[in-house]
Length: 262
Image 1 (cartoon, one colour):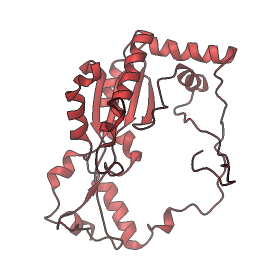
Image 2: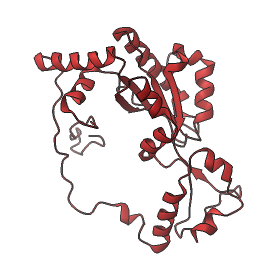
Image 3: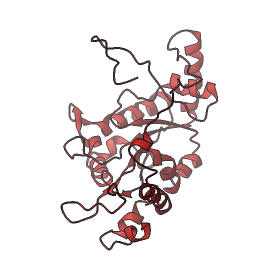
């Protein structure tokens, strides 16, 4: 049945190939849907959830903060840090306008503010901090036009890299091909989990490695609090971890309910 779905003449095979459609992964997921082993309920965690191990408090003052800051600043001065911004998705939450191009304040978009932060880091620590945008088929064109219309926000061409996440095909709950009101199949960007595969197959990861980048600071395009912060970089390096994630404690609101973040 999977072959029949993917062989539907209404699918644009060239378009799927252009954006890295993972046929093997789709085939496995489709088989699970048809077999009834992949459902809405199967994705729910029904066992206990434990706090992640190894959580540490990051100090922002005192001797330890100074040590971590120096570790991070040294990496920045060596040009070992790049900022990766997730700018993909389906461009549906801002009235079908690509989120990264939306004005935040004073005519500055989310992308503009991310670019300004890496430009500041470059000036502050005297070495390039490449800005890497992971777009999707739904955001790639508009984002590139936005960058060119604003002169890449002053960033050198070699310090602004883009690649696209992969693409997949919507299905009905029974595994048949979903067809929209326009009579066409519907494509979608399958979330941030394909970042690792996408940055590899795009060649961008190798380009970063070739220029000496060792640390990727990873954030969503609308997370403007995620800046190039040497203490956070230093903490990651001090832990010797392959991946570190910033977390915040979950707290109750004034009404006594748990907040949605944390």
